[in-house]
Amino acid sequence: MLWSGVDLPTVKDEFIQAISYTKRHCHMTSCFFLVIALQSIRALLGEPGETETTEDELTNPHQLIVL
Image 1: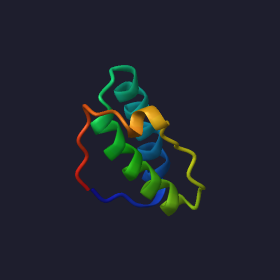
Image 2: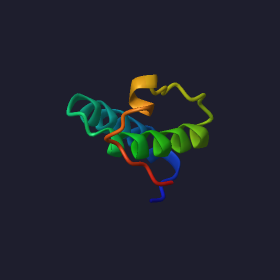
Image 3: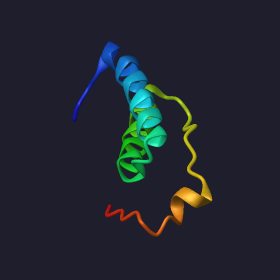
Image 4: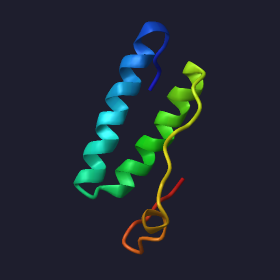
């Protein structure tokens, strides 16, 4: 997925909404991938990362993350 220029702030807003949706519906595996992509978008915009995961989210035995 590639974006550039004036579209990046819009993409960032959409990713924030998608992360909120996945957290509300407990789709944490999808959320982790979205968080990584959002951090990349913020880096391209020159913004510091603001997204943190909780210890419970990181240690959920029902989640499998392959990076």
